Image (cartoon, rainbow, N blue to C red; front, top):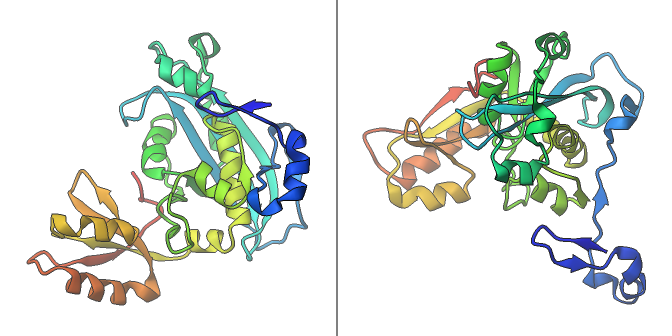
Length: 288
């Protein structure tokens, strides 16, 4: 027996095994993400000199604003081969931090992190720095949120990538960019809203969804639909664009080979003195 987030009781799979065997098409199986903190280091295949070094980062905070305080940071060091397969999980950190204010009840309810757990705790900058010793790619699911928070603790010029906006999920058949939803659609589940499990889930997502590592880290262009009228917003959202609320424009990352075609599409979509533009996307300065 288990409960949904809304509190509804559900029978466990073993209690329904006969129903599953009788009508398998009525059911879908979800498997737990197999990367567990107590098993690290984890070796999945033989390493090679040209493996890609990635550090996955996630921050839990006192709220959803950039002005909120970090209460937990997770980091996972991984290696992927040139085919985008996970080679190994080499190291992991999970550190709590006292925000200096009471943790809101809704945050405690979601994360399980209490005032007592963080009291007097701090994130060790030296340990954080040690995870970045070989200039890895740093990956977060919503790097525009996590990088500024991370840099309050340790300023850096690492190459940052974002699994939320740096992968064209709609083109890959996904109608949501939520980490949990993507993994569920791919047949996996995990215990969300703690930094280390979230990091391990991201690492696994990059492994099980084909080509995502290479897509994420490939040279790309930032296409900006400058001056796009409000009536185009739904079209742009369906096409995978994101809204920059500070500077008031729609944007998305695009493969360098497809940029000219995308700019031509935007010019057909709307006519304005502010034409759509594309600029090289620099991972070292991205998401600051």
